[in-house]
Image 1: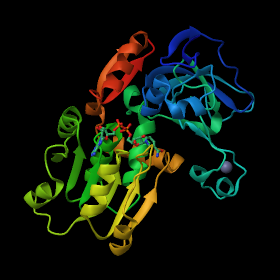
Image 2 (image 1 turned 90 degrees about the vertical axis):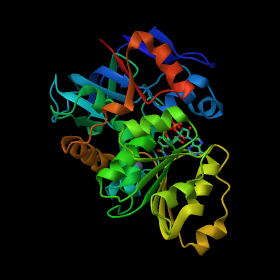
Image 3 (image 1 turned 45 degrees about the vertical axis):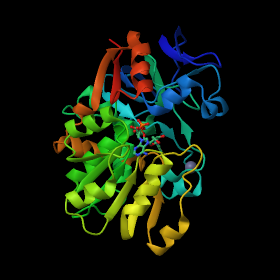
Image 4 (image 1 turned 60 degrees about the vertical axis):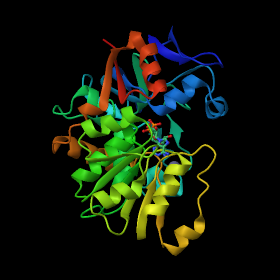
Length: 341
Ligand code: NAD
Ligand code: ZN
């Protein structure tokens, strides 16, 4: 089969022919229809420090996908050939304390599809039956293909009660924009999103976020005054991984505010902890999704009318993957979805 492989320890990914994976008794083989590019895949393409110490070479990468079941293992009972599915890219151990208590997202032994084991930039992907999620007919393929980052956004946004709250989202990347859309739909009063990239802020506007701030030119407190905010934000969603963004969030939170942190700061955020203490802030780290509870909510959001299609800016053939990665690396894109034909 064709697959995008990290086959050399250098910048890039290469389209190669590799064997179709063989499903074990409890595995499902999925024929991939659409693959989306994640920021993680860009790190792997760039072969940065994180990628060098994390990704064994060679490795078929990718973990955002939608497809249909092509084959099931002998012990698989829940799925049938031809069913349209996506799946959770975190494979948990099932035996640690958290897993046994039903909190798989807190598993200590998680393996990542397309990171620690072969991924979905391939004609066929093999994952455990337990990770497969059936996709209802009214959820389009391209939307199902971005459920992984959508899930990061939903997990982050739904960490705290949003009804009637004023919400700050730092970072208008695909996940920040979707997080802001989810916050609006979940009953927030004001939703403000910041970035330093005008293309991303314009995309946020096109996705229905009213209050966007280019913090490279404008001051966040000016926007807050302009929209009648007198005290501070009640909830913060950190989606940039940028230390100045997180510091400005802490600065503009109301006392007692709650912050969910998804963004990863390679060198750390370098915050003033005394501000966290004196403002009595609650900080919550977010990793991945709350697995199937988040998948449930995502499907419900889409079926309830949340339209994520404007977040997808590039729809291309898998053969044009280089241009897709170029768009992602330039910062001039939302989500890039590639079709396997
Ligand atoms: P992205 O890189 O596309 O978006 C980040 C955005 O932040 C960019 O548009 C960038 O211009 C903006 N930014 C930079 N400096 C800023 C500043 N000072 N103020 C405001 N915005 C600023 O990333 P993404 O794919 O949308 O993901 C968002 C973040 O979440 C990233 O840090 C990513 O590494 C992280 N992430 C974490 C998890 C997890 O499980 N914790 C999962 C996926 C992604
Ligand atoms: Zn576990």
